[in-house]
Amino acid sequence: MQWTSLLALIAAAPYAHALLRFPCSQLVTQRLDPLVTPGVISPHVHQIIGGNAFNFTMDPSITFETAATCTTCRFKEDKSNYWTAVLYFKHSNGSYMRVPQMANQFVGSPNGGMTVYYIQPPNNQKVTAFAKGFRMIIGDPMLRSRTLQSGSAESNALTFRCFSENFGNNTAAPGGGADTVTLPKGACRGGIRTNIYFPSCWDGKNLDVPDHHSHVAFPQGNVQPGGLFFNPGSCPSTHPVRLPLILYETVWDTRQFLNMWPTDGSQPLVYSMGDPTGYGQHGDYLFGWEGDSLQRAMDTCTDQGGQPESCRALTVQSDSQINACKQQPRIDEVVEGTYLRELPGCNPVQQGPGTATMINDPACTAGPGASQPAPGPTTTAAPQPTPTTTVVTPVPSAPQGPTVPKYGQCGGTGYTGSTTCAAGSTCQKLNDWYSQCV
Ligand SMILES: *[C@@H]1O[C@H](CO)[C@@H](O)[C@H](O)[C@H]1NC(C)=O
Ligand SMILES: *[C@@H]1O[C@H](CO)[C@@H](O)[C@H](O)[C@H]1NC(C)=O
Ligand SMILES: *[C@@H]1O[C@H](CO)[C@@H](O)[C@H](O)[C@H]1NC(C)=O
Image 1 (cartoon, protein in one colour):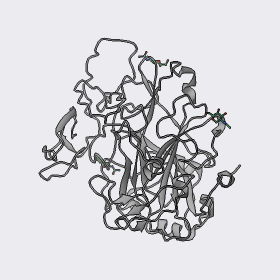
Image 2: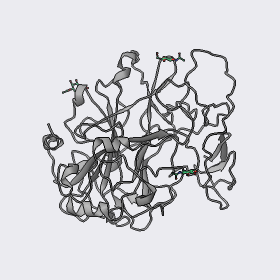
Image 3: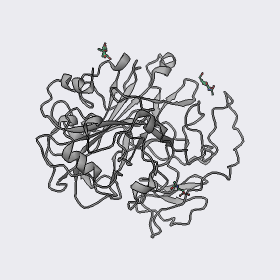
């Protein structure tokens, strides 16, 4: 079965619309977030796809055509970066293993990564591609509960699907059907997919704003049955410019953990920011298509199945080409491939329902070069490893002005910027390299 026939299967598709649907393989997994914590190590691990210009900082004026020499995405022109938090499996002995990502259905054989959609509005509404330097975030890593209004865009934007074997139970559009806003309760025999929809209306002015999301908004009105995928809604007057609707699908391969799943009904999965609920799910988008390539694709690629090969305006890369684009982690710490004693950054698991708090853990050994595989069931405190001096020293890029915005860096080895936090936040030491306004 092709994706297009799957789409046809999706009952009650009320609106026909064009889209691009394509895989991007894994670029790198590490504690960087150039949007929220530019220039420094992020408090939690992200998995990143897209162009290899990704770095500690991503200046809005970056010239992707030359800064990125390859991309893990199917379209050669797409040097954007897309990232989300990472799931870990918490073993009953307390150790954590990163849950790998697997290839989605009908995308070829990318090495992990995500499936990205650029969905056009139905009924031939005009869609405007993102402007150079545009970036945005959906979701909040500190949330552990949410009050969601049924039918609202927010209640449909960040969801999970529990697959039975071989993508069984995949008969509704992402975010529709039986998808949940929390991590599925039980073990999912075929893995778990997260669906992340971004707002698709722009204020037409700001490429980014301090909170990274109020320059965009969801279309007005309640979401149609079937979810945001089929949403025709019009944009509010405050955010009149209709953007492509961006959707990330990440399929977490939980299959290797099934025989270790707790039998007491507890949830062993935890997001890298210490979230076992799923309410802290978030996605970051940093636009980086070359020239006017995305606008050309939106104007001329009208395949309602979104097959990459049908979009002649763009250059399709093979699986081997996208899988060959890789980046070495810029931070010297182990975050995957082995059981870890702590979540990188020493994020404690915070169940909520209150908003999670950033914990200042001076004993955390998960700084650069110090996050080690779990050493076995020792209970006495191990001596702190001496930080190595060969790690990449992040160049602080926090504003040099009088106040540092919330979540910005306010201290740490080598940091020379302001140590005064914006009202409502205080500077807390996370480790020797990084203090943050929280
Ligand atoms: C779908 O999921 C439910 C519950 O998770 C399960 O009982 C059912 O057998 C699944 N259906 C298919 C076709 O896999
Ligand atoms: C926990 O169990 C895993 C899987 O058997 C093992 O690899 C890991 O070393 C264990 N961790 C501890 C602290 O015993
Ligand atoms: C990435 O950032 C680091 C630190 O700011 C810098 O030294 C390095 O040259 C950058 N790498 C690339 C490829 O831009």
